[in-house]
Amino acid sequence: MYRIYLVEDDETIAGALQRQLEKWGFLVHPAEDFGRITEEFRAFQPHLVLLDISLPFYDGYYWCGELRRISQTPIIFLSSAGDDLNQVMALSMGADDFIPKPFRMELAVAKIKALLRRTYDFAGDPELLEVGDVALDLCGAELVYGGNRLELSRNEFRILQLLMERRGQVVSREALMSRLWETDSFIDDNTLTVNMTRLRRKLADQGLSDFILTKKGMGYLVEDRT
Image (tube, rainbow, N blue to C red; front, side):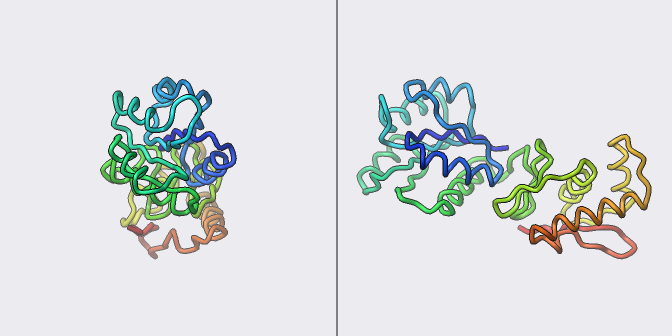
């Protein structure tokens, strides 16, 4: 799960951003002490920093410079001072992008996701298994899609994990039952059918009715959505 350090002293903006990003499966840590940004950064070890310009004690330019002394973690500035001079200043201080306020949440999330993809070589979050716009949170055993999080049972999670790991390939019922045996529960063909039916019903409720396809006589398939 990608970790985002949010350095924003406007509680309304910070709260709205945190809620939106958490819906997309990010772990967000808002700054608590604006005089100890580098210490909080070191403790949290984020994958990305969102940094306002106007802050208590020292401005965002100062903290950007301090962070650049110790890390190359991507930094995006958020500021109402969105004129060309401030944007040039932010980028020259080592920032990777600049989002002027006011901004649409959808745009902010899109820029954050794009920068994370570029920075981490499209490898993806090791704790987030992604197929197109559908993600499986491997720590929380939840499906993340369209800003919503879907809680899964242990068997549902293991079924989906195997299918998403082998996206674009047909997975046999035998392979799925073998994965489910790892739960130390008794699994037979009927148990797999029941779990698959429940999982598909949950996915359909989220608008993913065709996410798991049946290949008659062969098994199941999650198509690569890239």
